[in-house]
Amino acid sequence: MDNQAKTQERYKILINGRNGAFVADFIQYTESYFKCLSTSDCPQDVVNHFEIFRPDAYVCFAETENSKVLFQTNDLREKGLLHDAPVIVICDDAIVPKIEYSARFTVDMVVKRPISAGNLALKIIRYFEEKKEQEEALKAAEAAAAEASAEEVSAVNAEVPEEQTAESQAQETTEQPDAGPELVSEEERDKANALKSADVMDKDELLKQVEAIQAEMLAKEKPKKHILVVDDDRTVLKMLKTALSDKYDVTTMVNGIMVEKFLETKKVDLVILDYEMPVETGAAVFKKIKANEKARKVPVCFLTGISDREKIMEVMALKPHGYMLKPIDMDMLFSTISNLIE
Image 1 (cartoon, helix red, strand yellow):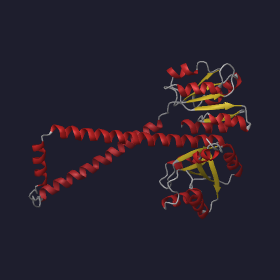
Image 2 (tube, one colour):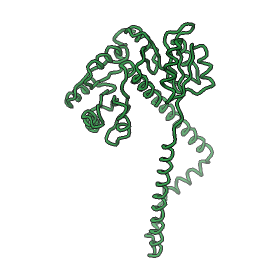
Image 3 (cartoon, helix red, strand yellow):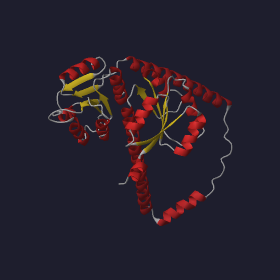
């Protein structure tokens, strides 16, 4: 396949962000997957870039829930100037729910900071892949429904005699006499109004009960998510187990030999996998997980001490759900996990 064909296959991403270093890293490390262009906070600049560039997604950064870029993006979207491109917002953990559940904004995906440029790229790739799978599943379901409907009509027509069908059609085309206005007494109207009032009262009471149940459910502690950590460095295993155990259930393994079997019998919400291990590499374990029907949907995040660009591209080529560099930044660790499983 030539370079031009490869370029045409890449998703086009328009980025609106003041963090120049992050945007530069994102563009540099994602050239195999995306064709990127940056824009400014000026609304006309954004509109012009959408007209010329026609991006597949719009990525913007929000400092607060009242950031100008959020209102600007919403306004442009309502006017149809974003051409139905999904909007991806990157923001601090504290304002994620304020944006996700706000009636003021229409956002397709919210990503928590801190996040590396590579992990953001992987998250966007995953978004497009899942969207494509959903569209294909919908098309298949619609085709199956249309086929089933056609078969049902054929079966019914085959069972009904031709004379009966003609008679039914004649009856359907016959005009029915007008029944005239319905006469309702004042007493009957009063009863109907009383029933309506009672129905409203019942609905209000039911709503209160539902809200009480929801509040009670929220008050209960949610079960901990289960994380499997695989690393040949026991110091790293101990450190991660200590750091994560307050919030998550953590299982550790010193190699990947038993990972596949473990995932067959245990429910795991995330696998943190060392990329370079003896006996069986992280890449080999990753491929086994993705080939396993029961485990292939479990998110996998690579852990690696290699930070050069070539190795990072090697990791990203496998399309994991994320990756983290050693030494581990704790803020980045918790944010990456939160983006993957919460």
